[in-house]
Structures are given as structure tokens and as C-alpha cells.
Image (cartoon, rainbow over the protein chains, first blue to last red):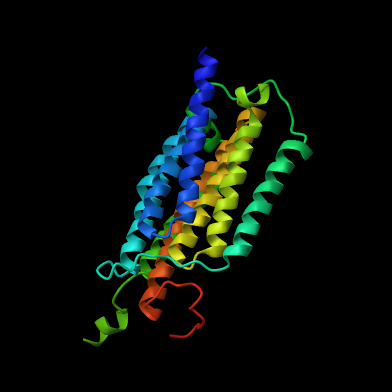
Amino acid sequence: MTNTTYTVIFYLFAAITVFSAAFVVFSKNVIYSAFSLLFTFFGVAALYVFLSADFIAVTQVIVYVGGILVLLLFGVMFTNKIMLTDLKTEVLNIVPGILLLITITGGLVYTFLTRAEWFTTASQLQGSVVERIGFETMSRYVLPFEMVSILLLLALIGAAFLARFDKPRKMNQK
Amino acid sequence: MESFSTIGLNHYLVISAILFGLGLFAIVTRKNAIVVLMGVELILNAANINLVAFSKYNGGMEGVMFSLFVIVLAAAEAAVALAIIINIYKTFNTVDVSSIDSMKE
């Protein structure tokens, strides 16, 4: 009985993820796309919980929903004329796009399901994964961890420098 | 019917394939640069689902760690890309990717 409940909840979150992602792509309004992306990110976080990667799910909610989505909404507000209600996005290449969507998705699903012979191991990840992530980060992945932190710092400094509004030369002239 | 009721690796692979196709569709067909960026985020999420699913059904930790790094790099990429888009908007007064055809101001 619990297995049936598990399956139903999985399909519920899978449907939320796929349909909200489709709404992101097919909606004409940029604001609707941004808010639908919120549901996609939450659905993907729920799928991570099903995959027993709870730490990744929490990171997904914090970074994507709390950071990237807010950043995207700021971008929408900055680059569209809100007062003129010019929030539409136009479409080009619609027929090649749909062809590409169908062929890529169909080809990937066909390859994943029938052509590829995935491994079958009995030892799956079980329970919480937080403690193991801590051990891995401080043992095998110390160097990538430090490098990615430096890269994030540099990228944020560079982004703040690029998006600055007034040119520094004007400040020096006065 | 058995393959539908017991959730396995294939279910996650199908979801990630659909997300990848939708993200690619957004990149190819949208004119607004921000919606193109949303397509890139969808593709990164699809790759992450694959990594975590393989990690779960393989029993190792490599996929989980790699998806953490992917999330960090996605944050850096979104910040830099939005800064570039804001600069494009200041220069050209539009974010329509099909009408930007000059590298000079």
C-alpha cells in the first residue's frame, strides 16, 4: 500500500515538473515564465528527495529559487518597459524548434529506454546523504571545492563590475 | 504495467530528457534573452537529475558531488549572463537576441 502511495506522489511531482517546464517554454509572457520556473525548480527538488539526495534538494531550493530565480526576475524588471506593458517575448524558428524538440526528446527517450544497457547494482544510496557529502567534500573533493569557491567569488565580482550603472571615468573627472 | 508502478532509473531519465528538449526549444525559438537564459537553467536541471539518479542507482557519491558543483556554476553563470544582458539593454535598448548585430557601441 505504501508503495502505491510512493508511486502516486512520484507521478504527481513528475507531472508538476514537466507541465510547469512546458509552460515556461510556451508562455508568451516573461513574468508568467519566471513564476512557472518556480514550480519547475520545486518539482526538481522533490525529485531529488525521491533520489535520497536531500542535501541537493535543499541546495536546489536555496540557490535556484532564492538566488537565480530572483536574479531572473530582476533581469525581467530591468530590461522590459513595465509601464508600457511590453512583457511579451516573440517567437522565431517555431517549426525547426518543434522538430528539434520532438526529435531530441524522442531520440533521448528511445536511447535511454531501449538501446542503453544500464548497470544493475543491488547497493543503492539509502537514507540521508548529508554526512557522506561532508566527508567527501573534506577528503576527495577539497581541491575542486576551493577552486569553485574562488571561481564563484570572481564571477560575482565580475558581474557586479559589468552591471555597474555609472562609468568610473566620470567620477575621476570631477 | 510493472515498469510503470515501480519507480526506477528509467523514470528519471525520461523526465530529464523531456526537460532537456524543452530547454533546447526555449533557446532556439525565443527572442527575449532572459527566456533563453531560463532554457539554459532547464537544461542544467535536466543534467543534474541525470547525475543524481545515476548516483542513487549506482550507490556511489560521485554524481551527488558533481551536481553540487553544477549548481554552484549555474549560480555564477546566471549572475554573469544577467550582467551582460543588462549591459546589452543599456547599449541597444532591447534584449531581442535576433536584432543585436553589432559588437560596437
